[in-house]
Image 1 (spheres, rainbow, N blue to C red):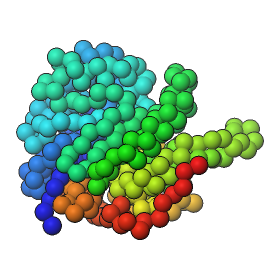
Image 2: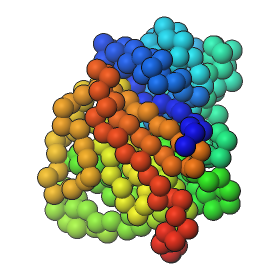
Image 3: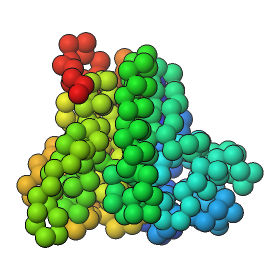
Image 4: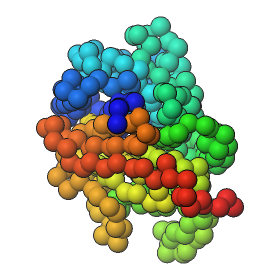
Length: 316
């Protein structure tokens, strides 16, 4: 089957470090050996620790362009980005405004709005801002929770009307993680209702955001996320969920592993790395999670979205 589309995925790239430079070099080597990507997806936390101040912020050059783009011709392609929680600490709008700034060399930085849609052939991509799930973001942006509910409703509508054979959604926060520190956020964004205990031990039940049902009933092939500094893959309700958040900082779960959570695969080698995604001519989606040493740690293909008999998840 001929290959219709190739692209690379990198998450949590926001620290200018030896790890980020090694990730960039490994991405370039992979691209040269396996065919250049049409574009790169960036999964948020683009600038540690506090995002950027303005479109003039030198981090755009130092952390992103001079690390990932300028030294590597294979990566001089459009970079479609989403915002992460660290990007909200200072001025998230500056990352959106940078898209049309004259400082954006070659126009490669692409973050036109908090939520966006683009298409590559018969594959449609939906970029979403998931930061309303995070309490630290809500503290500074009280409207973030309301905005995320609106984003999920918008996504549901746009996915339903999209006629692309293959649909891919990407945002910062995952629906599944074995990380002890981020598990509550994953449940909150995934489920329509979730329970939690406050610091005094009292049990609360609140509405969640119900992202998983939206993905499943609209036959999304792949949901890509960062936030957790690990590489992980899990399939649920026909949707392949991949975390690729190991570009620049420590490569481990935040606050350790929750042994009660059982997922299909997670890297245990604490490897920094990235993901390569291919969509073939029949619409099948292949994801390889790759260490900076060039080793394929996990290789999985999803075709569930192509099956007309796939069970639908009923909307509430």
